[in-house]
Amino acid sequence: MILTELKPGERDDIALAVDLANSWETLNPPQERLTLRSLKRLLEHHGHRAAARAAGEDDVAALRSVRDHLRAAFTARSETAAVTSLNRLLADEPAPTLRRTRSGWRFGWDERSPAFVAPAAATALLDALATDGFGRFGTCAGTPCTGVFVDRSRNRSRRFCCGLCADRANQQASRARRTAR
Image 1: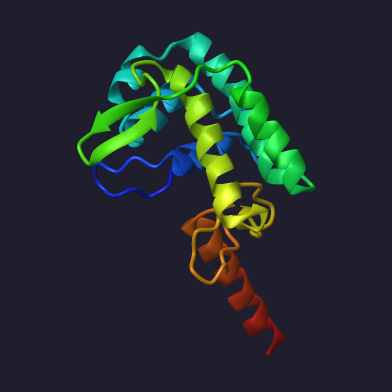
Image 2: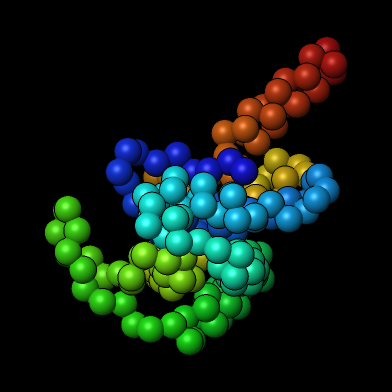
């Protein structure tokens, strides 16, 4: 599982949502990459140590369902369909509370268990939709990858889910050019 690059101590709910959405493998069996071990690694990577320690098999099953809703938002045919998919994740969730962090105040959920992932991810993606538009949601152009991403580049030019896919596509294009000569 390739995880989004984060600065030390950084928490980014959009990156958490993207990493969870990309925890499904379309290329190699077994297709299921979200295991208890990988869930703990994902939570730890995103700075949620208490949730990583508390994670259990029930959380894995619940977050697989969350992942499917997140992927549906990225692959939706319209902005309305994406919003509907993300709103479904929030339907049964409690409202966030205001919490003090090292950098000030922010809205959030009790992060001592993985249950916070669904509302945090859905809210972050809905905020990205409202702020930057559905055009920032993408699926990797690196065939046959099906990874998803939120394009946060200034010039809206992102085409790949990660550096590995971008490198692979560039190498493939370079080989094609050499062969054509």
